[in-house]
Length: 354
Image (cartoon, rainbow, N blue to C red):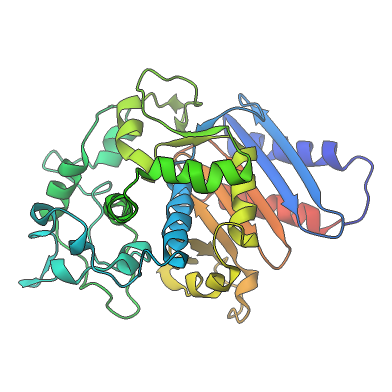
């Protein structure tokens, strides 16, 4: 990257302009570029500061994926093991009925990680009152729930397809809700403790934790339109799959380690990037998502993709292999979910001109 005296201020202005153009309340952005002379920049705009902790929401799925792969490399986990071996029998019974056939015993760890289980999404399912859990939370209606309740909700919903059906993928938070207790049963430890031991301590990060106290007001409130959402009971109920809190800096340290082979062998990267299309340029691999702008010519080289994860809160952690660029941060807004992608694209176009 060419030297530019005013690069930091120009990047800040670019971020400020994005905030104004999109009507966001605030954003945090951390950029890193791998090169002979590594480039790092962090900025914030609106009502957020660079060091402000925020909810990672589904960005936490990358931590869960890395833990699963670490257990695998240690010989403690096989991706094709059936989850019925690790969950209570009462949970598994009746979990997946599709066209009058019971597939509950066929669901594997791989199916959960790749969202190819066919399980419905408890979070966006419409209940009898005509609202989904997501709709309730967006309206500011806070509520808590247990994992046992999630299992019961799943059983009352219709699966999308049989587990592992070729080419089929349906993004469902139910998958990672079930995956966490499976990993905890295999390891004999709570997932948060595993993340502390295998991620935080080796990487030297301390500003990341699992949200567990509904009285905790440390994380920034994210917005739905102009309304800040104070939903602490829900954020606690998400558990490691969505209730993780941290800074953009801590997330950047983790994201670089994820792709640099510090958490699991880099030889696993091609396997986890075997993509299945979800529509509108979005794809899912093994515990990781990717995006390719619709309308481009057919993609041959997977390095042209934006790879990583985003979450309901507007949090994101993305890697652009072709440009060797990493992006972490939050737009702190529930809708529209494409805002993190648009921010990354805007900043990438700016950096490409340098």
